Image 1 (spheres, rainbow, N blue to C red):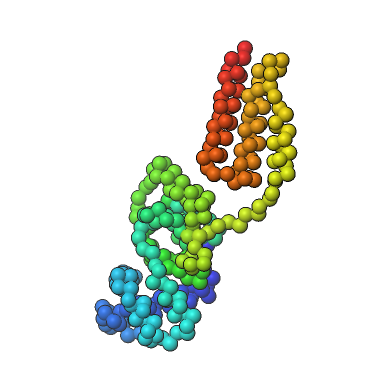
Image 2 (cartoon, rainbow, N blue to C red):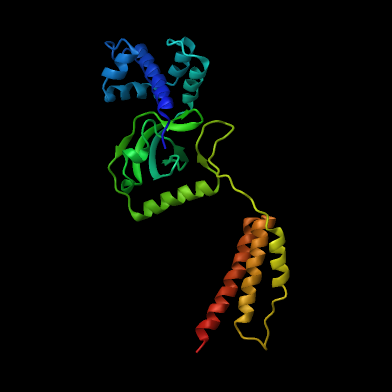
Length: 271
């Protein structure tokens, strides 16, 4: 769940150059004369000041691109241009997946974020999840990364909060709302689903289930069991074949519930 070394090198080449440029404009640390000095000698807290200036004054992105002081090619400049789409704030890191970590923003947006040189699971132990961090997310080569700085909070979250965060993730996953890119052509993570058409099988089940009928001459269990079968096959037809609306599906589920409750009542009365 991290970039290749080559891509991570490129990321930091661009970010150090951009931040050095901002420092030159505001003259916060005038003794820093080169990108190399900025990278190797300026303290992390001081780099944080430059970053904050950049994000609160995003015109510096345009200024850098216009002047192009490092003579970057167009591809590199486009990466920096895309960084103007940054998302900043507090995030809950909810879980680690194979390809990325799940960041849930304070506005409940859910992001799939890739590490830089290291995966998030190498920086944060799984037992500490969920964990609250302050971060800035940036687009980079079709992925989302953070800008290299995570400000973490030592807060313990209870069972209810963990359950709510899990539900936020599951809802986003089910509805294709996990943001893994700021590319307008591809904004959400959606798992590829192989659709198998069961229309013939479900039609056969519907046809057979219609023949199932209870009666006074049959055991009491038969009627509610047959009702369960019919409602279940109707549900399969609506959800898989017809892709009915949610209200129709809920109505069929209520049929299932009524048949189930009737079956339980009969079983409870048995001696």
